[in-house]
Figure 1 (cartoon, rainbow, N blue to C red):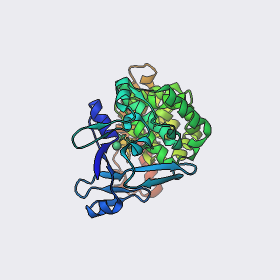
Figure 2 (tube, rainbow, N blue to C red; figure 1 turned 120 degrees about the vertical axis):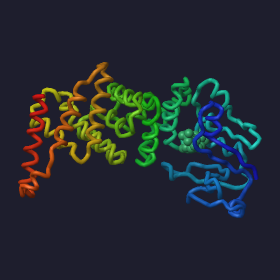
Figure 3 (cartoon, rainbow, N blue to C red; figure 1 turned 60 degrees about the vertical axis):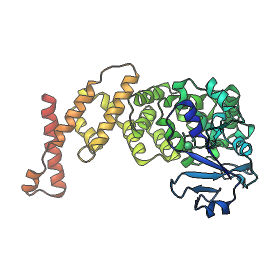
Length: 368
Ligand code: ATP
Ligand code: MG
């Protein structure tokens, strides 16, 4: 049995980047061999094991063949006679198809090292087209390695065009797509992900709402430059869409709740945020209420951040509305409900009185 480090661990070490998780490949072993050594089996689809001590993933070498539409349409063949080269050829990119043994010797049958040097994301074989998720993976790697000067090889982009045109991207589950999108959004240059998807026609298939939306990408770029969290980046990306489109995208991709919520609220309230200084007290209070700023202060803060990113993407350097909105939020949050309760108010009457006090607080804030 031979054990190799494969994929990202080899690639990132050669690039001099930190290696986060290590994927291991086992050649020349059976499932029984692995169990006998104490590895714990995981995954129903293919033979992957967890190391009894480190918990890292060890996969038996396998070949695969397309047998139907989508990701489920694969048949796997894992056996001790599958060679290292046979396993590596089914991988997506040449830079991901290198292996390293325990002595540090790198096995590179598909010339990933050359492509690392040339800064090229190149597919390993025509079998690339068998899993449409690879279109998203390549775009994600393009976003990640753009600062290092990487680009997608012309012939790979052409293959990605063919996959997009075939309609196969529609067979991806929302879960698999979102996982790639989420990781891409958190890269240093997430806009590159969308540029690449646009260039190969995949954006038209997956997120037609964002085709040619330069403002969306500029806002996302700002959010990434400021190292904002996922939900802020998502809301920046969708900020210019109609509410119905934001809803549709959220649902189609099954974005997490926090992402969905902030994107929707931003779509609804961005204009008011920008007009904050001119809003009459009642409208300003309504905005604060909509965000439930009393119980969810961070959500309103995130909204302000999105507004700032969007305006900065437009070339504006200052956004006085931010400070003003924060001040208004603080003023209403400072209203004390206890005197109203002590005065015997309950239920709807209490709610109305509280709102009245908060309105007074906003009015006072506006005058100050
Ligand atoms: P990351 O740094 O994002 O973890 P990675 O290259 O390690 O990058 P993984 O998703 O951990 O990516 O996968 C490990 C390896 O498995 C990849 O390097 C690649 O060789 C292979 N691989 C993973 N997913 C696919 C896929 N959909 N098609 C082909 N090969 C894949
Ligand atoms: Mg990995």
